[in-house]
Image 1 (spheres, rainbow, N blue to C red):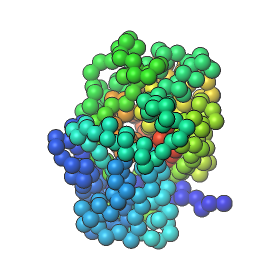
Image 2: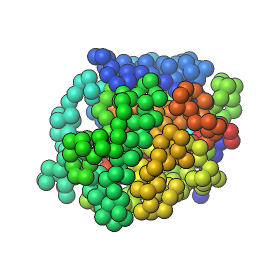
Image 3: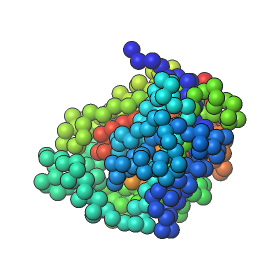
Length: 386
């Protein structure tokens, strides 16, 4: 039986940089800016950071490059890459490192600039060479979109989920983004706008797909006792879970069931809480089908009921369950891997610093990251108290 980390570590500072369009700044530059902001917000100095976790879509040496660039000589470092779920899975890794005495203060950071330095074709070629998928690459799928389109089509066929319900996910995200000055897309968006947008991979249009933006984020984790002395409002980690069942979508047992059903159950069990206890929910919404699948697998509704659940404004501002309150990957931004921004938004909400989009009385938050093609799933439960 694993040792519980419930309430033993807390998130201190957070930082953002280079959002939307980084204006020619490199990945390292915007990550460094976000990292310095997070360390300062933590009440620490960069010299206090003795643990660093980061990963990159492009470099296997990234943790060494960033430690060097920031002037850190860590006693613990990690660069395990789980795709977009990495930075929520990293919470569990950081907690284990801190509680084992390997380090005291861990900086988790990430950034990328795919909008200002576009190189998607080269990246796809590189990934195909480094990460071969023998059952799929010969057929040249338009991934990752086509894989998510398969899951959406299957959910629609099996449970009667509609295109309108998928569109409602994007509309809700845009309504949250409209209240967030940091969001990249803030203009009005209707169901019809989503449905009539350019088809990318049926049934998903361009408005069912996440943005391509620049951006960097960072946060600092410490043990709870020093965290209370360092920051007026440390955000406590109550539970974590991580699971992955496949890499290629063709090896996914059921296109409507993800490993979030395992990662979420683990996180809730460790936290001693249930879905109905969550005040805000931050889900990796690379595509509109994602929140529907995750709300089901995490237990917010039954399998097959995700479509109706996201309709009628339920996850939008003023709705029953605030989901993706910064605008999500669909409207806030999406620089390659997104989950670090889920953590930062959750902390912002729990600290009552979200301005017009603030959810009143928010004390608990679920953050859930997705990596690959519905492959890696990581869940964490955060709270203002233990």
